[in-house]
Amino acid sequence: MNTALHTPMPSLRSACAGWLSVCLLATVAAFAAPQAQAADREIAGVKVAQSLKLSGKSLELNGVGLRYRGPFKVYAAALYTARKVDSTEDFHAETGAKRMEITMLREVDSTEMGRMFINGILKNTSAGAQGKLLPDVARMGEIFAAHKRLMPGEQLVIDWLPAQGMQITVRGKVQGEIFKSPEFFGALMNIWLGKSPADWQLKDALLGKSETDRIAKL
Image 1 (cartoon, rainbow, N blue to C red):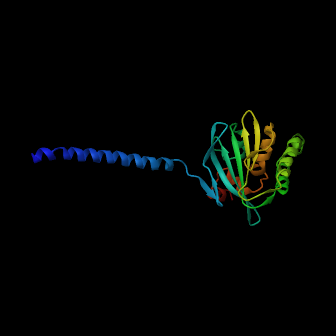
Image 2 (tube, rainbow, N blue to C red):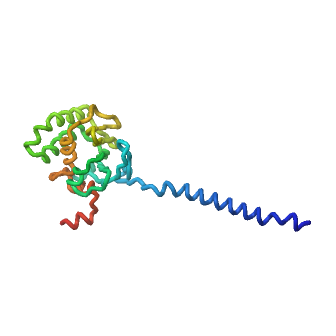
Image 3 (cartoon, rainbow, N blue to C red):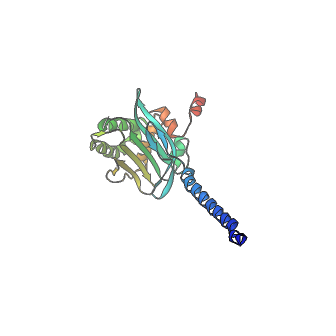
């Protein structure tokens, strides 16, 4: 009689063990799933996403770096593209959506930053092409004039939307109408990626070149 009462126990114990195994595997999978995604990067205290969506398309972080003025860190810049690019020519040849994300690391007078942008455009644009860009340069100046100062943590985002144009966002708010000219977008991006960039180390960082790559060029 006692044997009959105890007979189901091994099968019950096996069933419980199997159920616990399933639960354990499900729990491990649940915790592992977020880790399988690329973790955000951090630079100078700024979290930078490894990927994002723009116009319904997936963009990957192409490179990220810091802009210095003297010994001071001014902003962190992150470049996103649909495919990896490692040269200025590749960047301009890429026809998909693109993003430049600038996060301020110190307080900057927006008029001064606007002046820096305009100077960067002029340094990287031929005299013959500059005249065509003047209306868009003036509009860009108005955007900076509308914001007295950019504070640490605030962002300036430059998006290229295929078949639409360039969209500027400051502090999370879109600034006016889209810039239609691809030439102006190219000229603006050449501030960082052109032949006379604002910072050579930042240019290399945005193009995804490692310190080893930079040393190899010396």
